[in-house]
Length: 115
Length: 110
Image 1 (cartoon, helix red, strand yellow):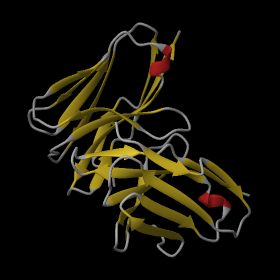
Image 2 (spheres, one colour):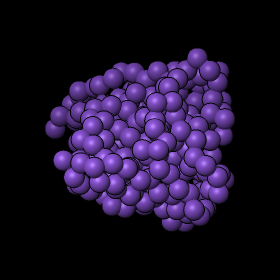
Image 3 (cartoon, chains in turn brown, green):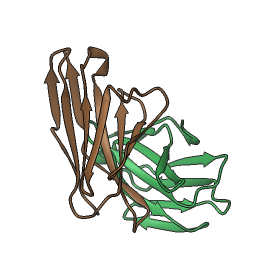
């Protein structure tokens, strides 16, 4: 199956700093990527839809100025958590839509811990 | 928000037993997907269903897409310890939006 990578796999940062997470589709071009967050023992919650070459679409309740998304190419989307706080600690997962198979492939996730 | 109702929420079974979980929706989906998520990792696609009534197998896994396109089940036969994880059903809406079930947490006792 298709491969989606995420970097870093985990990050620990101090409160107030910004953290950038990268999501790459390795063997297909993805015009659309998605960013999810997952709290322990819960399902994935969609944060935003990242469209190549245009602004991201954010889900209700997700602050676009706090979670900056850039989809600069057909294989790369980045999520920047700005001025991170402990409540932002979570498991962040990206996915990329394969337009030919009408499926989504997920990255391995990034565990963010804000101290 | 989620539009897929997945059950059961959790299952505790003995190794070797068969498992069945299902997903229902009030709206029609053109595609149904089943994912498995291991602890600390991203979901991995298990089976994709595209046609109403379609029955698809992947090793010990079998999934069917309901005739009405509003439900699907996933069966795991002869469970083994590595089947432990969370299983999600999912369906794309409007081409770019994926809806997920709440997940079924499977525990397999050796």
